[in-house]
Image 1 (cartoon, rainbow, N blue to C red):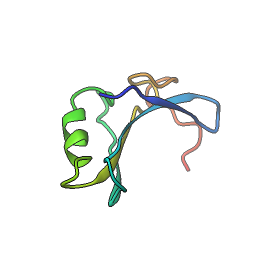
Image 2 (cartoon, rainbow, N blue to C red):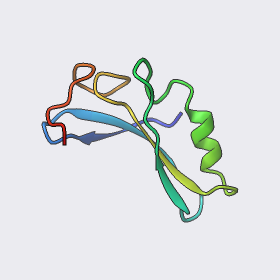
Image 3 (tube, one colour):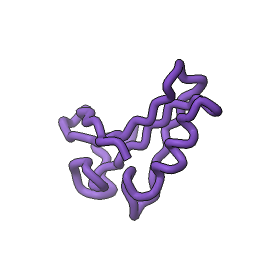
Image 4 (tube, one colour):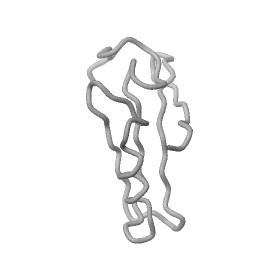
Length: 82
């Protein structure tokens, strides 16, 4: 899988996101969240890579939710439900 980019949440926590981009302009965007016991690099890359091919042309983002993979914070934590 590609190395994740880090984004800063409103509370300052660093959250990891892997990005799979098609070679031409994206036809659609998909944000794919992993399950509770996984992370974005745990087997989802084949699906994301296939969707990003010229055949489908979908830009795919696979974020690590808090406390999973390379994202900071305790698991299951959200500072604000909105």
